[in-house]
Image 1 (cartoon, one colour):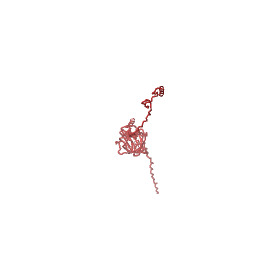
Image 2 (cartoon, helix red, strand yellow):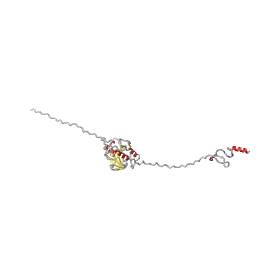
Image 3 (cartoon, one colour):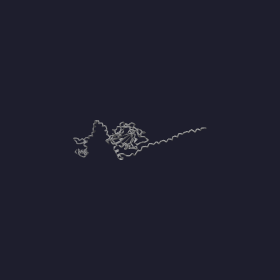
Image 4 (spheres, helix red, strand yellow):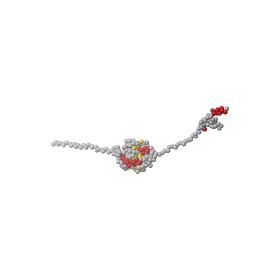
Length: 281
């Protein structure tokens, strides 16, 4: 009987020893050990975590974007030279380094920078028969800015009362009204705008433009009020000299000389003589 019991016990326990298993051990987290037999009696399944309800959080609204001003490129403040009107202007070289700002007649021409009025021409002296270079801008005002640069506004219809040489003006102050005086009389109203340096008024070809102005006009129109032509003006002046000679559109027309009309000579009056009277004796 004892032998049978031992055989039966050996068959019931793999490995041939009662109570000892030869199977791989079960991971400790997946089994429960019986206190009496030390055998695996059950497997605990992994528990599904219970979701924790999330509390809604009100996020603060972002602040409005900070307006960053354009970089400060100079100590001077500039404004676009036409105020209160829609404008278009040329951005290419038109024979001379200047630009034509198209604007309605009567629009305000304003000083682009604070400075002193240098030249004022209130009379429209231009005529097509002579086409004098000094007269082509018609009525005009020039201002020498605090930056040392001279600014010209020409083809004006009127000059503002009180604007005369030596008067101190501020940026944006009205100097005159846009028109088509000078050689613009057959075109729409516009402002002849030019940048140069201060010279004697007799050097009119310097006044009418030495530096291309449209990059500065673009900046002033779009809000970059500190882009200054000062350095470029100085560079051009150093290259050409402060009093360069005229090289473009310099000659005026010679007015035709009217020749005196030859009149036919006055006819000599004819004297009629009475025939002699014959006396009959």
